[in-house]
Length: 186
Image (cartoon, rainbow, N blue to C red; front, top):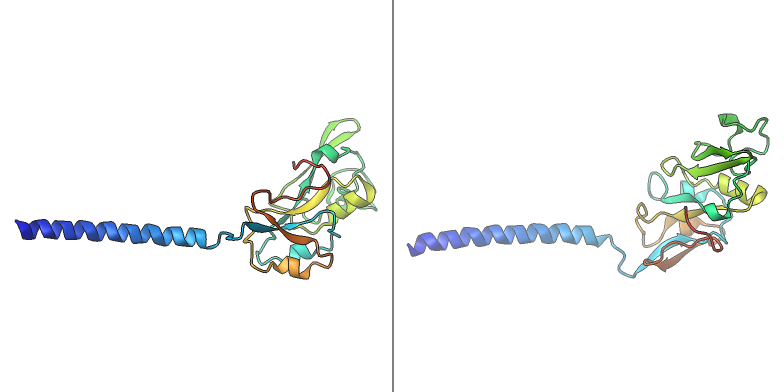
């Protein structure tokens, strides 16, 4: 009887040990990429010059940087410098009139003469063209930010290393977004 009991205890302990190792292994790999310092990379919209390097220098296939729209700063203009190319012949949604190369900035009629502009983040490549257009011919309600649900928080960010304006910096992970002025993210 003792030998049968010992085998059961042995098998049970082996199974429990294997389970503990498995969950420890999973926990280790889930937390190994987490930022231990409590800091994350972010782009300062006041320093950004919309050079386009965010779209090409991220280690991810599609950049973790995305365009953000501060709705409370937007004028909802019919002629939006972020939406239309400077040479636009007509103010419609035709691709040849749009500044965004992938059509990530969406336009929706509200009431004359107001339109609402939203960003489809799946299409946004962080080229900065709409941000530059908004800043040049509008009120600057569009700006670029690192999206932390996508960012790997690399030890040395490849975008930060190539940024000519030194606009990338480390910020506390509990408040990871650097908003433009008193803007509220939308």
